[in-house]
Amino acid sequence: MNSPAALKVAPVDEDSSKRRQILDGARRMFMEFGFDAASMGEIARTAGVSKGTLYVYFADKCALFQAIVEEIAQVHGRIGADIDLDDHDVPGSLRRFGMAYMELLCRPEGGSAVRTIMAIAERMPEIGRRYYSTIIAGSINRLAQYLAAQSQAGVVVIDDHELAAEQFLKSCQATLFLPFVFQTTPSPSRERIAYVIDSAVRMFMAAYGGEAKR
Image (tube, rainbow, N blue to C red; front, side):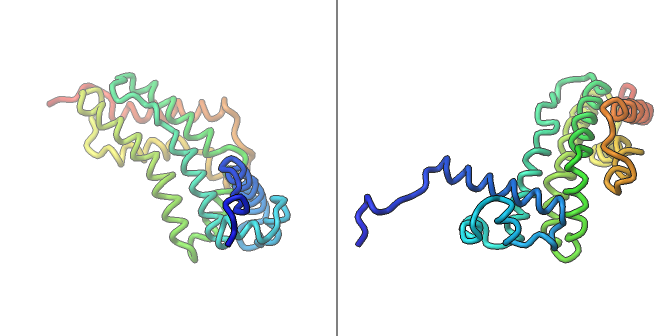
């Protein structure tokens, strides 16, 4: 029987650091080579750990990729987290939300993540569903909550807040996201993003602005 002194357990911070090391290496492999071409052996070498250590933390490649999707979801979850439901400056709130959304969506590594997920979503639909529900739908829902509050206050006139939120976010992507994700253009500049966001805000307010008549 082992004595308590013989039972060595890695400190929590050491365990967290090793997991972080593995995730960083896996992210580089997935983003550069895609899901299929990134083997667990190559991921272990890129991360600087043994293959045995890799399997201690993640049962298989799918679990590892799922962990990366979870991290992406956490980052996206911060978009609009500080949006003030009582802020009646709708154009200003939309601009801030739209800028944060597009700067994150069109960051250099963002396109690789989307392309990788799209490539495997058909045969691994649970990852595609998770990405959509936590990242895309999450942003729509947060904006819809704000629009519902402003509609209730009479600042805007909106019947379907979720539809209006999605319309705004799709307008923010116009000329930016698809050319970027299909590698037709590089990541857009902050100035270009701001130009498109301003146009999206004007269109949104033209459609939904005005004092609600109740």
